[in-house]
Image (cartoon, rainbow, N blue to C red; front, side):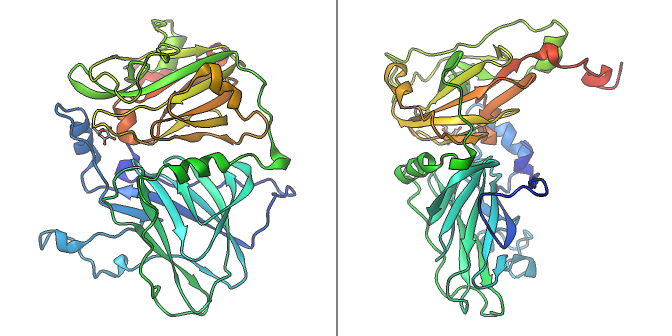
Amino acid sequence: MQRVAGLDGMIVVSVPAGVSEPFRYDEEHTVLLMDWWHKSVYEQAVGLASDPLVFVNEPQSLLINGRGRFNCSSVAAGAGCNASSPECSLPTLFTAVPGKTYRLRIGSLTSLSSLNFEIQGHSMTVVEADGHYVNPVRVDSLFVYSGETYSVLVTADQDPSMSYWAASHVVGRERKTPSGLAVLRYAHNHSGPPRTLPPAGPAWNDTAPRMQQSRSIVAHPAHVEVPPARPDRELLLLNTQNRINNRVKWAINGVSLTFPPTPFLVSMKRGMYNNQQPPETYDYRSYDIASPPAINGTVASAAYRLGLGSVVDVVLQNTVALNGKSETHPWHLHGHDFWVLAYGDGKFDPDKDAAKFNLRDPVMKNTVALHPMGWTAVRFRADNPGVWLFHCHIEAHVYMGMGVVFEEGIDKVGRLPKAIMGCRF
Ligand SMILES: O=C1O[C@H]([C@@H](O)CO)C(O)=C1O
């Protein structure tokens, strides 16, 4: 749970000299979006492991490039909250020269929140997602889920005598956190903060525009990587929240992931792994995703063992949690990019819905949203020898078991260093 403790940053990978990108811009800036709690990560972890569950709940602030807002009047005097500190002034997102086009490299490193990001009065053109060029899509605001990165182009084409709000708003959970704010300024304009009220953002519980935007992101026509025509293996992964052993957990096909004392790679390479395989599917014909059983499942450290080079389809299926709500889960795969084949509403039907997969120009990503009461289908080639986590990028959720592990080709992984289990050998 390092992100909750504030560990974040962005690595920008440049294209090699001489290689041109399928869009033009004058300058670039990075925009790191975060959420922030006052409780320490240790307290949060204790709450998540307790009975009754003490969930982390909504963050106190949203941060843009590390800066956020908090209303000090809600805190006892002398508690060290000082809203008049110069550190607390509104951050500048960037200062624009009229007429120029800027590439914003936006990353969401939130621990929980799904966000909507906007720059008042300026549209954005999405040109890249998770390191892959996309067919340009013009949006008024960008929905961005934890673990995702995007590049958007913004042209400074508005009245240069004004300043404009940049804002991040919580979506997908009831909005109890003030929006993150920063200011887009125009060069030679010293007018201070914008003269308008900050934007309110979209309704937090309106899933339709989020689904629509997810579906609109496809590969750039000149950069399509055509997926293999069919998979070698299909996994249908039901995401449920259940009480298991008197604790609230997240489980995938009834298995809540716990990390083993000996890392998977080490136990597998040393012949200590018990070769337990988690279920590949669930009873999708009769299962009611609107009322999953409250008590169900096991806690285990089991991995799907994949053939090296094989093509794997994963369909993630959402349900409602124990509180009756269906949440957004951004799923992130280590070690690979996957093709995003489809997003659907309701229950995935393998007999009908596989025909709707986009095999023509799907975008490749490494993080994808599973929308409330919906399903998301991805395909990847298991061509990277090792053991890899695929998990909900919400820190609290992976802590509560919301992840699976893939192993492929570990015989191709070289000899492990002697000190891999620590330095006392
Ligand atoms: O994992 C979670 O637990 C709570 C709630 O679902 C408990 O039922 C919540 O809001 C989550 O995201």
